[in-house]
Amino acid sequence: MTNLLDELVAQTPTRDHPQLSSGDTVRVHLRIVEGERERVQVFQGVIIRLRGGGNDANFTVRRIASHGVGVERTFLLKSPRIEKIEILRHAKVRRKQLYYLRERRGRAARLKERRQPLRR
Image (cartoon, rainbow, N blue to C red; front, side):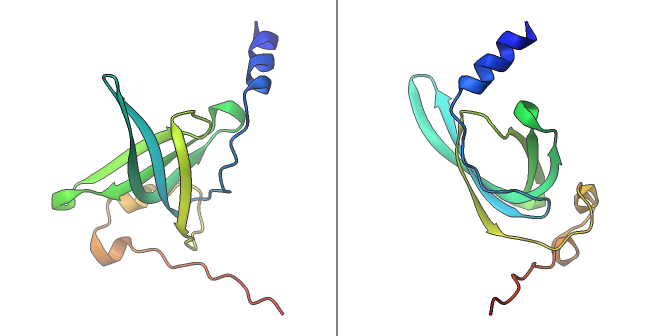
């Protein structure tokens, strides 16, 4: 049974998403089906968690919605519903899972931006 599953997964086309890491601010374009209509919804926030590898790999994005309410959403990395992922900025973080951001508000929740080294 697992061999058949592995073969089916190998046949599916690979998606070329950018290399994600914790602390990145991303914009995820997700295809939403409502009845017979289909639209693209954008979810923008900070990646607070990256989990798994292979086909079960997923990541959680956290954003602050209206009235300061935090919203987290977990996406499967290889989901066919994900249209594209844009990385807006990279942050300098020292851990893989940023659960401490849940308790922080406003300026305390800011992450320092990771600068690219100068090429000479």
